[in-house]
Each structure stands twice: as structure tokens, then as C-alpha cells.
Image (cartoon, rainbow, N blue to C red; front, side):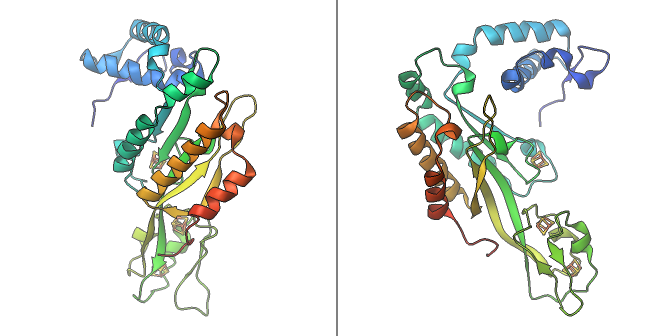
Length: 279
Ligand code: SF4
Ligand code: SF4
Ligand code: SF4
């Protein structure tokens, strides 16, 4: 893990006021750049001058930073204990797929003005349903999921699983020997599984939920979820199918969310919908 760097540009380090003045869609990148440059310079405290210098260099070279796509993750890879899946390999494969698609070349052909960050195709991976990297507002949002299932081990009726589930997806009825899991409510956080003392609840299907077609801007919309839990290869196939559709239909570089039709969403859902809640 990289060393921790503190941004010291006001009396209250958590507020990061200089970063707040940078347009929101480049703030994350500028912050990453500031921390990278400070790390390379061996600093563990960043001054206001450092922030301004990096910001100026970054905004000047914005054009060379544009690569046609943005791929990011939540803080899971830094060691977040909530991870339902470990998506590090998936990230590498997504990066490779997105690079191969030459989305910058595509945008250069289609967009009539200078290409800006807001034209880029956005993909994010969040390692659990807390969704810290905001998959709901990305072209493609990928969310790690781990579903519980019942094993043959007898249940002690301790109700630990019932109390742990924030979605009220687990109910223990008087007349039943084991709890009932409502997969329509379960988000796949996997949190209930380690709380079961008897091994009655164990890991079931593990993989990723996929949401498509989210964006912010003048006409924001939330991404919609393709039903199911998908493995890495299926996720990569869905991403490829979305890019194919985008390249075919984004005539002037419109964002994927603007052109994703109901018919295409239903086609993707039919193609990839997996058996929900089953192992
Ligand atoms: S999405 Fe989940 S795993 Fe990722 S940083 Fe947030 S809480 Fe942690
Ligand atoms: S995986 Fe999460 S949402 Fe699903 S039943 Fe367990 S605690 Fe509830
Ligand atoms: S935590 Fe395990 S033992 Fe306790 S009620 Fe749930 S399934 Fe039964």
C-alpha cells in the first residue's frame, strides 16, 4: 500500500477547499495527480503551492490526458473490508479491452469540436453494493456481489443473519427449520455469511451486477441493471456489446446513456440475464 499523503491547504485538512474549486469531473484526476507527484518527490505533506502547481500543469495538458475512456474503481483495492469480490483482475482485463477499442480514435472521427473529458466512455467497478465509485451514473457500472445460500448444516435459530441484513432479505419463520432468503431484496453484500455460527449460510453465487446507461450533465439519468450476477467473462462480453452498440449509434459522439434505447436495454437483458439467486 502507498504511503499516506496529507493535503494541508486549510485549517481543516478534510475539506480540501482548493480541490473543490476544480470542476467536479476532473477533481478526482487532479487529486490523484497531486498525490502521485508528491509521492514521487518524497513528500508526505502537500502545500497549497504544490496543489496550484500541479493543477496548472494538469489543466494545461488536459488534451494529452484524454484517452477516450475513463476506468476507475472504488477504494476496495486499498483494503476496504467490505469487498464482496476482489475485482483486481477484472480491472486489468477491462483496461485492456477499453484500450484495444481505440475509443479516442473513434471520438476523433465523430466529435466535431475539441474532445473533452465529458465525451469519454466511463466504466467503474465497485467491489460491493455500497457503490462508492458511483456506478449508477456511469456508462457501465460494475458492482461486486456475493449471494448467500443455505447449506445442509442445521440452523441454531440464533437470528444473527436476520439482524445483520440491512435489506430485511432474511426472515426466520416459526414453522421453518432454516431462514428464508428473499433474493429480490438481497443486494449481494455477503455480510450475513460470516455471522452464521453454524455454517448454515454459506457463499453462493459470486460475481458482478452490471448497470448500464447512467450519466450526469444537463439531462442526468441513472443506470439500469441487467438482471443477474455475472462472472468476469460475462462482464467483459457485456462491456464489449455496449461498446459495439455505442460505436454503431453514437453518430456525433453522444454519450452511451443518451443513445441507449429501451429495445437495446431489453436485448442486452435477454442476452445476458442469468438465473437470479441460484448457484
Ligand atoms: S464500494 Fe464497497 S468495497 Fe468499495 S470502497 Fe465502498 S464500501 Fe469499500
Ligand atoms: S448478502 Fe447482504 S443483502 Fe443479501 S441477505 Fe446477506 S446481508 Fe442481506
Ligand atoms: S445465522 Fe446461521 S444459525 Fe443463525 S439463524 Fe441465521 S442461518 Fe441460522
